[in-house]
Amino acid sequence: MAQTTLSVEGMACGGCEETVEDAVGALDGVETVAADNTTDTVEIEGDVDTDAVADAIEDAGYTVA
Image 1 (spheres, rainbow, N blue to C red):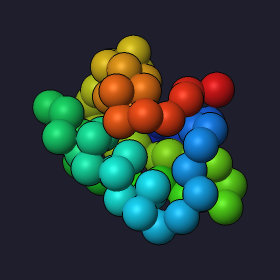
Image 2: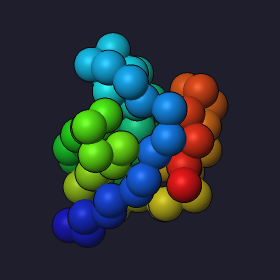
Image 3: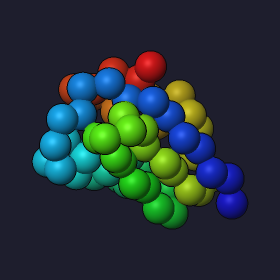
């Protein structure tokens, strides 16, 4: 199982983390996802396409740095 960490701009609170986690978690192949607004990162475990993850995060209203 692959682990991916992406930098995400625009998360400011726990609600933002939940929005990102829900968006990424809905993708096929995602085993776990954890967003952290204090470090501006999201960690994903599973076999997923990084571009699909970035698209899901941006569709949720955040920017992948």
